[in-house]
Image 1 (cartoon, rainbow, N blue to C red):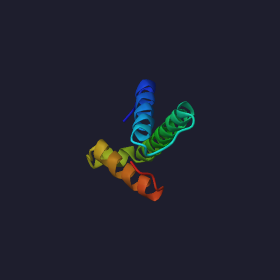
Image 2 (image 1 turned 90 degrees about the horizontal axis):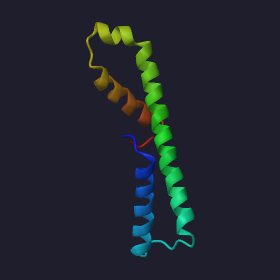
Image 3 (image 1 turned 60 degrees about the vertical axis):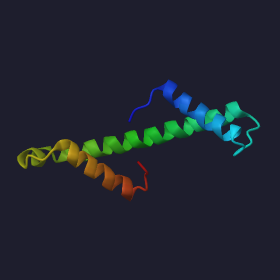
Image 4 (image 1 turned 135 degrees about the horizontal axis):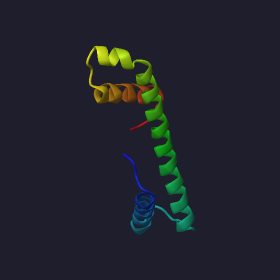
Length: 92
């Protein structure tokens, strides 16, 4: 799932504001903490983008075989993505 810059910012703000409000964390600099959360989210999205690119590369190498067996591309995509994510310890 792709998130827009504004959505990422909104998620980070909600996370930090709710944790502070509920006294679950003390943030000396809430803005800096929000910036760190934003970077974490962006990093995870980049990781998933890389995973998707790797899956597409694998599928492109086996395109003829997929077509020959009339396999649903998106089902195979999901299966390969799940397998690679598990191998790489990526939580989706």
